[in-house]
Amino acid sequence: MTQSRTAIVTGAARGIGAAIAVRLAQDGFAVGVVDLDESSCTETIAAITSAGGRAIAVGADVSSSADVEAAVRRVTEELGAPTVLVNNAGITRDNLLFKMSDEDWDAVMGVHLRGSFLMSRAVQAHQTEAGWGRVVNLSSVSALGNRGQANYSTAKAGLQGFTKTLAVELGKFGVTANAIAPGFIESEMTAATAERVGVPYEDFKKGAAEQIPVRRVGQPSDIAATVSFLVSEEAGFISGQVIYIAGGPRD
Ligand code: NAP
Image (cartoon, rainbow, N blue to C red; front, side):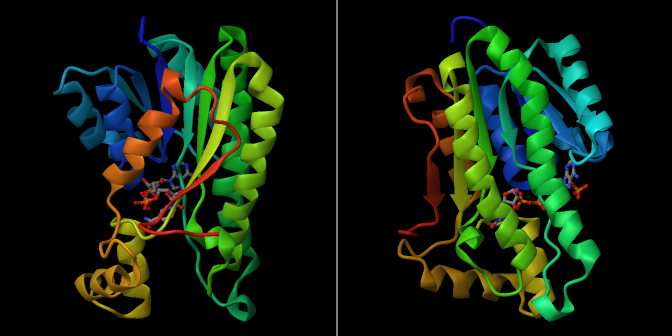
């Protein structure tokens, strides 16, 4: 990179988002670390700044258009116009269809779909002005269908269509958009799933690893490494793709 660029990573207080934020800071980006609660971002910010990187914590609910506008404005003022966006914030509200409430459905759509839409719409103004940009959306293998996840699976499949449309619309401005679809990644999200089904997390991970061709579960760093490549200069001809990172093939 000739000059420092600014990236925004949502849901970056912990888990996959935190690993992505730290990795992009190592790559030379100034990073807007966005999560629901600004104070929950302390560890991510410390990891970045103690290694000599630049980052600010921004509290925002990505499903609120006022929060998103304010967050992007703050990042622009304090770090410079953001041209890289990683839509990572996510929640699960799992239940079988007949038990899934209206609130479970709306909450998941709100964070994943509305959140990615609002963030992308706000950031594209800076990307198109710069004539360069990168968007990476976090999909999931659940997009292919997963028991108990009608809401999440729909949102993650929707993000794939959203990604392809951004790629088509924004390509002429030098902006690429890609989706990453992780399989089982060690994080609080999969720990919560283990708790929900009543299996100790270590056993849950071991069971998952046995089903994965490379015989291990994924780590947040596996996702961060791929984001690092997709937002790099040399990935400029890759756009509208869905990359499954699951330790084996997926359709
Ligand atoms: P995680 O540990 O649960 O972290 C998600 C982060 O997003 C949390 O810090 C959470 O904040 C934040 N967040 C939730 N709602 C938000 C909102 N409305 N606005 C801003 N931030 C919000 O999850 P993860 O495992 O790192 O997953 C990261 C992404 O990868 C998600 O999109 C997830 O769906 C996807 N993914 C994960 C896996 C996996 O195996 N872990 C697999 C496939 C895809 P709070 O803590 O305050 O709620």
